[in-house]
Each structure stands twice: as C-alpha cells, then as structure tokens.
Amino acid sequence: MGHALGPGQRRPCRRDTDGSRCRREDRLKVPRARCASSPDEQGWRLVRSDDVTPALVAGIDSSTQATKVVVCDAGTGEVVREARAPHPDGTEVDPERWWEALRAATSDGILDGVSAVGVGGQQHGMVALDEDGQVLRPALLWNDTRSAGAAGDLVSDLGGPEQWVDAVGSVPVAALTVTKLRWLAEHEPETAARVAEVVLPHDWVTARLRGADRVRPGTARTDRGDASGTGYWSPHEDRYRLDILRLALGRDVGLPPVVGPADTVGEAPGGMLVSAGTGDNMAAALGLGLEPGDVVVSLGTSGTAFAVHDRPAADPTGAVAGFADASGRFLPLVCTLNAARVLTAAATMLGTDLAGLERLAQQSAPGAGGLVLLPYLDGERTPDLPFASGTLGGLRRGNATPENLARAAVEGMLCGLADGVDALTAQGVPVRRVLLIGGAARSTAVQVVAQNLFGVPVDVPPPGEYVALGAARQAAWAVAAQRGQAELPAWSHRPAVSLRPDDPAAGTRVREQYQALRTAVHPTTRREGRSEPAT
Ligand SMILES: Nc1ncnc2c1ncn2[C@@H]1O[C@H](COP(=O)(O)OP(=O)(O)O)[C@@H](O)[C@H]1O
Ligand SMILES: O=C(CO)[C@@H](O)[C@H](O)COP(=O)(O)O
Image: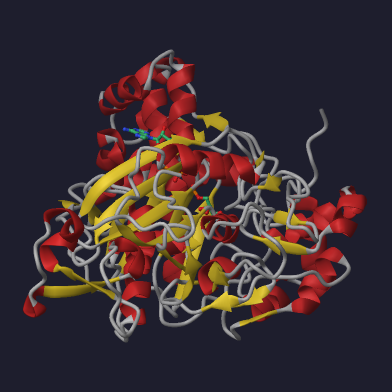
C-alpha cells in the first residue's frame, strides 16, 4: 500500500530537509511514525507545528459496493483527500477483494502522513477462518437471503421473538451473522467443522491493516457496534451469548474480543495507529455527530433508518434491530434490502440512466397518478419477506407513463423507510428531524419526495462519505485517548440543505396508497415467505 513503510523505516519530516530548529513553544506531539526527529522520553517525537498541520487521520468505509477512503484534519474533521475503488457485485465475496479494493484506493499515497486510521464496514457479513487464519469460503454478506429458513428455525429454537429480544436485542433475519452460521452448519457441514474463528468484515479489514497477510485466530478485535449485529452478542449485557452461538453452529468457535470505543487495536506497518473500527451505520452516526431527535435515513445499497439512543431497543416485531452504537450507547436501526439500486433498476426499465430517471420522476406528481411500486427487488428484510419480488400496482392505461414509473420507484423506496422511522418512534426514539444521506440522497427527485414523506423536517447534509468520516473521527478519538483525552473530538459540520414539509397531506396520501398495496399483496409478513420460491 502507498502508505506502508517497511519495519523500521521512517518517513523524513521537513525539519530533516530544511535544517530549521524547533522552538519549544510551537512544538506538537505526533505519533512516532510521522517524523524522523529524536524521540522524547514518552516515545513521541517533537516536531515543529508547521510540519504537522493539519495532523491527519483517515477513515475507511468498506461497504457493499465499494471501499471509500477519506483523510481528514484530525482537529476539525475537514476532508482533505478522498479515494474509492469498487467491490465485486454479489451477496458473497472473497474478503481478499475488499483488501484489493483498499490497496487500489490507497495506492497513490493517500494515506501518507496519516497518524491513525479506522474502518467502518458493512455489517453482519460472515467471515469464517480456519486455524491458520485462511478464509474458508467467500463471506456471506448481509444481503444474502439464503439463511432465511435458518432464521425462522432459530427464532423457534429459542422460544420465539421475545426470547431473542431479551437475549440479544434483535429478532434474527437472514441478514444477521447468527443465521449464516446455522446455514453453514446445515448446508456445508465440512466447512463448518473447520471453522476456528468467525469475524465480521470490519474486523477482518482492520486486522489486515495491522500488517498480517492473514487473520490468525485470536488476533482480530471488534467493537460493540458491529458485535451487536451478529445476533450472538448482547448490547444490554455487553457480552457474547455463547449459548446462542452454539445454538446456531452446534459448537464453540473463537470470536474477536470487543474493545472500547476509543481503544487502539494496533499499528499499521508504517506506524499509523489503528482504531477499533465499527459497523458502517455506527460509523455514519459518528460522522454526522447525531443529537437526540436526529434520525438518519441512509440510502445506499441498503436503506437504513437509525438514531443514537440512550437505551437499547426491544422490538419483538423484528422491525427495529436493537444494535449498539460506536460511542457506548445504542443504535436502534431499521434496514431495508432495497434502496439506491431500486432507482438503478427503474432507470434500466425505462431505458435511461439515473439522471434521466431523476428528470422523469420530477415531471410526475405526488402519488405517481396512482402507480405504486413495492420495491422488493432483492427480496426484503423489513418487512420480513426474504423471497418476495417487486410489485407494480395501480397500473391503468391513463397512468402508464415513464414519468409515473420513475416517481413510483422513488416513492416506493422511501415509503419503506418512512415506515422504518415510524417503527423507531414506536420504540420511544424521539424524531425531530430526518438526516438524509447515502448515494441516492444526492438525487433531487429523492429529496423532493422525502420532503413531505416523514412528517418532520428533512435535512440533507452536503454529499459526503459519512461512514468513512465517522471511522476517521473514531481514529482521531483513539489518538486523543492515547494522550489522556477521554472525549470524542468535536468536529464541525458543513450546513445541511433544510427541507420543511410544504404539503404533508400529499405525503400522507403517498404512504397510504403504498400501505394499501403492501397489505393487499402481503397480508402477513413476519413468518411469510421464508421458503424459497419454486423455480
Ligand atoms: N445522484 C444519484 N441518484 C441516485 N442514486 C445515486 C446517485 N448517486 C449515487 N447513487 C447510488 O448510490 C449507491 C451507492 O451509495 P452508497 O451510500 O455509497 O452505498 P454503499 O455504502 O452501500 O456502497 C449506488 O447504488 C449509486 O447508484
Ligand atoms: O445490514 C445492514 C444494517 O443492518 C446494512 O446497512 C449493511 O451494513 C450494509 O450497508 P451498505 O453497504 O448499504 O452501506
């Protein structure tokens, strides 16, 4: 990687080349790897402030579709460099591809001069390692629904949804790691028998950042946020539920220890500190600096609605997952399987691109002339319909236009998340504004529809990689903690575009027609559709 100095190598600082002398009063302390001048007694190297301004931290978002990297000023959070590289499509992937994407994104030296790095990763993915740290099979990702049957079985095995909520805060669906382990035990027993340790995508990438060519059992670390998405770690008890791991896999295997939010888990070969990292939604919460009353609606590969809350969620309907956050609190979250890629699919159907879809959608009216799309194109997680497909309802000769189809796609994607925000409200989460982020939040058509759909003001922060930003903020926190500062560094935020509802009745009508079609097509949800459709 561009940043990686070999063991013992040091990058020269400017003092070495310009021969100037440090004055005591303008010295800063920076980690050892940043500068080749003499160490002081604490092992920090003293360098002139203009040599290290700004002190830099990096955040990595290893998400479903891509790896994104931001490098920030550690003091303010201002992004100074960015890069990205794509991941392969699919619902299972060899973790090596994530590492290759990270190498590609950082190959031009974007991490040069960075003092600490953190990783936010797609949640739930099952990375199964053998006793040598070799990956045993491609990681099964959060959006792989083949473990839906295992999820249903596990719910029954423990005694029902309430028992799951009591144990781990969430009712298992195919997304959760615990169901993937049960699936592995049932469908690939020989592989299951060789598993020595199970880690999550961010745990794996973080361990690789520390320089190892493989992730040997016992070396990876995780955090509360990502651990809470496994289904075998309890957010309210702060501990693994090994009985549940056994229920899924039939035996014990190694799991990464859960470290604290501001902990450092090691150093990269060039000397960068590596922070604990977390799940991507938890990282986004850090990147946005959420306040009580803020609910994030993120429109990436997944759609998520979540908030930072002071107590764990407990929703036996399974709509709200009772996750932990990356700061020591909780992160009640609703996730849909179909978000930004609904728009891509609709654009393909219309023979256009995202810009074309955007134009068409804005030429239609709220309600799309009665055309409604249930956008369950990849099955759905919330509601729990893993093998459902999309449904276009209300189609008439008079409304069969490209404009209405484009609008119905945007409305359908957002209605599922508006239902998600309602589910958070039902859990006692205060909802005073929605923060709209993720790739599809860049779309003006999405913003126009969102404005009246949530019943509260919608703020659209400037386009940015908030997962990576949050991971970088965690890295800055780890650096601060090493200096004895306990608080999460305060970072400034650029102002959001604020959208006030101007026709809430229109939003209500859009949601009502969506709910009517959903009820007609899927009258029950929770236990329905768990069997794969006949082919
Ligand atoms: N202007 C836009 N309008 C609609 N969708 C967009 C736009 N820009 C990006 N996207 C979509 O956003 C998605 C990527 O969003 P992102 O939040 O980065 O996802 P992830 O974190 O899952 O990788 C892609 O599916 C892309 O097509
Ligand atoms: O499963 C969830 C949340 O529970 C997803 O949100 C994944 O964490 C993937 O995120 P993106 O790639 O869509 O950002």
